[in-house]
Image 1 (cartoon, rainbow, N blue to C red):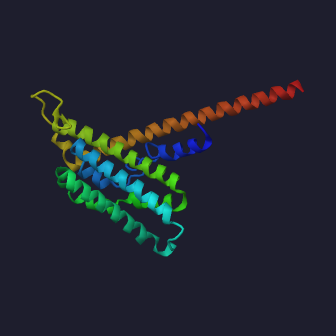
Image 2: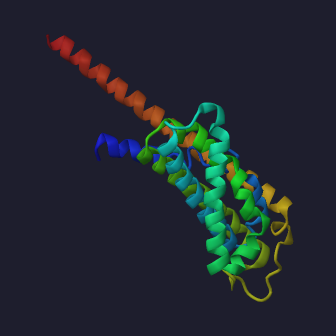
Image 3: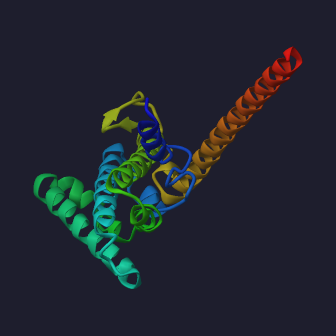
Length: 227
């Protein structure tokens, strides 16, 4: 893998776990609480946000040289609103049930903090390819988080997965998992698990760096002794 490809992969992959929008950055928690009662709703919202954030990053990157910094936020919001409107019309035309299920939260995608944050922090300062990878990575991380939350909530709260029964007829659903407080507690546990995983990976990288440094020092010492 070349240096450029490796750099693009790092830009993309950081949104999956290291800077996951929900579990690490704690952005756009409203849909994570409100629309994750079923897997299909969580997946639809995740894919919608992925489309919006990726497309908006590309648009912002393309026009960044022409936008006056004083009006950049209104321009970003206008771009996001246009893209969200397109997504709404597509869902309303071809998937009306999903459109109705997501309700007002679909329109609120316009003001999701993660979308505006990536436009301001990354896309406004980088090229199109890098901005695409950043937006797509953040969108995938958001979708994975929504899937994890909705899968656990649907299985425990309804006893189903994608509408199909998972447990026997005698299963008593955990109604707490269908309610927002249950989602809030679940997100807390998933945040803790994600941060623990990231901490473990950081320790592994630090250990590998120390080992590499020790080997380099030993090699340098050996060469000095030979001379």
